[in-house]
Structures are given as C-alpha cells and as structure tokens.
Image 1 (cartoon, rainbow over the protein chains, first blue to last red):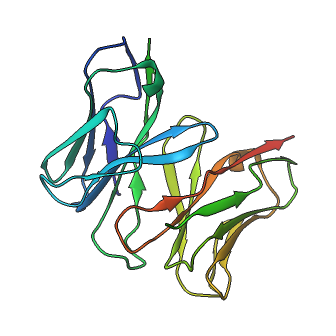
Image 2 (tube, rainbow over the protein chains, first blue to last red):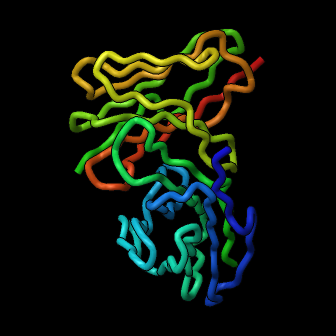
Length: 115
Length: 110
C-alpha cells in the first residue's frame, strides 16, 4: 500500500515563527511536491524535487524554502510565517517517468493556521 | 503553459441522481488523472486516462477521455453521500509537476 505521510494534521503558529512541515514517502519515488490549497484558487505548486538535494521552484515559492537530504523525505520551511500563509499544505510523490503507472500520490495534508 | 478548467465549480445533487463533472484542457493531454478529496483531507487517486476515447470505471464512477484528448468527463451514477467531496483533474505535462484544475465541490443531499 502506497504511503505518503505528513508530520502534522493541524498546526497553529504565530507570525514570525519558523515552521517546518515534513513529508515522508515509502515508495522510493524520485519526485516529491509541495502544494498549498486555498478556496477558489485550487492547488498551487510551491516547490518540487526530482532527486535528493535537487529542488525546483513552483508557481508560488516566495516565503518558502525546501530541503531534500534523503530520497524519502521532503521538508517545507516557512522562514518567517505570515498570516497569508494560513492554508492547507499537501505533499505528494510520484515516480520518475510519464507512463500510465506513474501515479502521483498525496499525503493527508497539514492545515496550518498562522496567528 | 497548460491550463485545466473544471465545470461546474460546485454541484448539489439529490441522493440517487446521476451527475457529470467536466475537465477541459488548453492543450492536448498526455494523460489525465482524476482525484477525490474529502473535506480537509488529502487527495485520493481515482483513475488515470491516457488514450483518446479511453473509458474507465470504478464502482459507480466512470471517467472518459475524448478522442482529441482535450476533454475528460467524470460521471457518477446513483450518487450517494459517500461521493461528496472535491473532485480534481490533473494533467500530465512533459515535466514532473502535474497541472490541476481548481476542483468541483460535490454535495449529495438526502
């Protein structure tokens, strides 16, 4: 059974705090992704990684950074949390390639509230 | 860049009724995924379509990809409360990140 886990389901932080969101997958996937989901805006890609220590900016990278030191783990970092970063954060992973079996799997999400 | 438009944005149906959700791409699709998301949770993979004219079914949910590979539809037969949630389509581009539609919120009322 495929599994993508996220460190927290709910998180409450204060403005200015450094926030770490962790994602772990057990499928040996090369690609990992961080999205945020907001009402009316859908899923927006923050960062993705296609290999260890590799990262690429997505559509909305400002205010975020990422770390991928091990293949199974992809961390999203909010250097100084702000209220406009209150959102649902979703991690996903996918194997390399574009074939029909390269399904992208998602974690359960972390709902972050920044006060 | 590729964009996906889903319609309708939201849908309220009576239990037992059929419904259809559409996903239209601005470019030819290499492949298309359908996901379901229960409120406040992650996305669950439903099915993937790759060939023009392809149709797949899982329980009471059927997805089709048109021959031109620019439009897909998701059809639910005899809807149940368990079908409620947000349905998202995602397109496989040439590079790793999937492109997603904004989702269709489905409510099923008794």
